[in-house]
Amino acid sequence: HVQLVESGGGSVPAGGSLRLSCAASGYTYSDGCVGWVRQAPGKTREAIAAIYSGGSDTFYLDSVRGRFTSTQDSSKTTVYLVMTNLKPDDTALYYCASVDNDAIQARGVLTALEYSSNRGQGTQVTVSS
Image 1: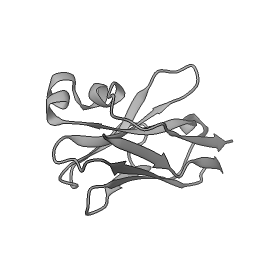
Image 2: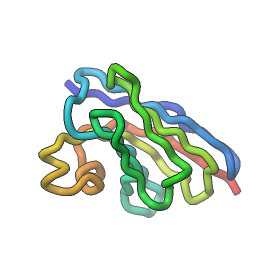
Image 3: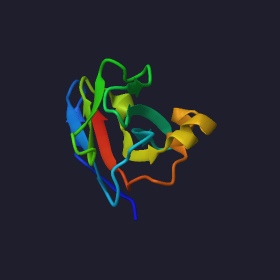
Image 4: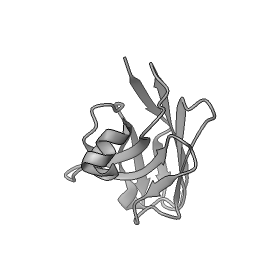
């Protein structure tokens, strides 16, 4: 049974930083990627970052590129999202999701993450202006 558990959310002022963690149990992924998806009230889910199983390839949505960085530990059981220069528009529930290569090929990495059934419950990030 795959379980993803996020932590590290909180409330910060604009310009602040947070580090989110996504701990995986029940498996270590050998293909595909683990990504971060966020959803703000009244808005659709938005995949913003992904790190592929090799650990060196990453993807970022334009709105967070240069401010957010995703890494993983050597055991591939924990993925991190370091968020800097946070903006009020970053306020959302953030959750991590995992997808395999078949899902990425079929739907594209962003859509695959946004609709993945392998995801955690999320951690809230609130950025005040």
